[in-house]
Image 1: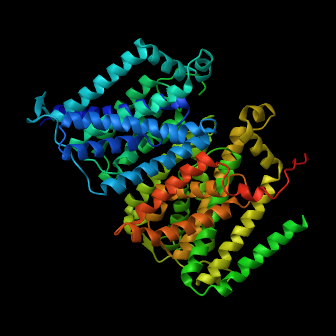
Image 2 (image 1 turned 90 degrees about the vertical axis):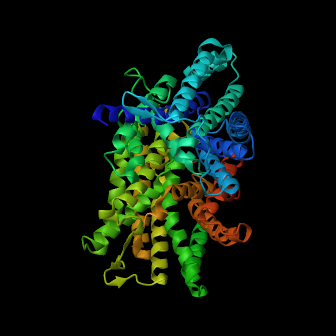
Image 3 (image 1 turned 180 degrees about the vertical axis):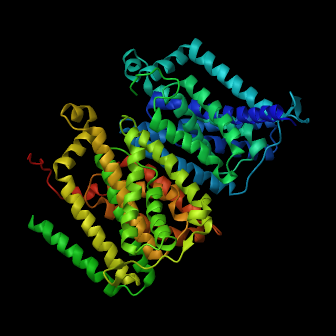
Length: 292
Length: 323
């Protein structure tokens, strides 16, 4: 394999990883802007969705049904935790809310540990068949599924945000929560929707990567953190930026993985996050001079 | 005022006499750990309760203090006192570098930055094997010696730690009743209003953050001298969350909160360590943190002012006199 096809190969891995980060970042940014909550439990939705789908599949459900049931249940879980933990404290400070999501994250991870234990679980690849050859690089079919799912999810969300009344209400909340409230948009309903949507998107992302990475009870923590890195790259107030940030991070991680030891692989994202927060906290895409 | 002094006197006497009645080294060890955590939580409490910011990476500052002592005393053969002083300075410097840019922003970007920083430092403790010894850690840290007094037994360390807690408490007591303390409370109530009144909000928040990191480093340095062995495992994200839990349980912005929170959470941890394997056979330490997560969430939803607020019930509300 020559250098250019190797680089292409890595690009595909980066895009795959990046699309997962993008989806998590998208859920994080939407929730953050609607509710003011930095949801540190977002990664747990990814882990629980993957674990639940694997159990449903093992119990005999077809893969597609396992996917749909799991996504629906995690969306319901998202709505449940919003009503149980976030909504009662909605008048509290941002400090209180972020601590609540940390407690939530640990509790959900504990729930996953109690139900699934520490052993990884798996799902079969969504379609059988060997890898495709693209320009000298071999592309796993599951990679195409992941990229396709990310593209479809983003397209659907784009239609939702641009063309539907509810979607426009969500965007209004993202742009200016107080102004949205003044024109009669109910932030409570928006908050509930944001958490349910975050649950669904997280679960879908988790299920699609499980055939590649396997699923464990503690997979969500680092994925959630990576989502934050992606969101910080794009700027916490910018949905498109978050998506772009996810892809940038995925590609950056894959290309730098060869340079550092595997133990330090996760350090790349953390260094990027620290650098972004310290040097350009408004994000790469933000117009200069905007005060966050 | 006299009642207050009497309360202090009784408490100090109780802590001074306690070891006479404790025959088990295990209990003495638990008390030492509570003292060390109290030092950290005092600092974190100032950051959270007065500056209105949270750190999810204080275990990293705690660990940096420990590793600073470990590296300087073993590999560099420094005497113990300069190594302990260095264990305060290094975390403080690092906190200034992280906090400087992020605390200028209104939102809780410090929470994200410290979260990332905490995980990063934990990874580095494991991976920089040439300096830290990797996952197996470092041994052979000498006992702390101050002017010929060598802290080679638990009982001596108990007094060292609790005298340190007392000194830190006194310093903080003076701090929160100073102009700076009132300015910090003003920031907590309204950042806009304090800025309008000419308070340098970013600067004060940074000072609170650096101070809390210095205290965590101090506790870490003492911890290294106490156990004479460091490894990465006590300095992970879960420890950071435990510190936040201690601060919250005790009550933010209360004087007795840190001591109460550290005591309750450490005691609960010890009980859980004993009780969980009875319920779930073969369960390891990771189950303990579940309970901490649930408690953390419940307190923040139901009673965000924490248990320390109970002690305030006995007091009449009073208006702070203006200087």
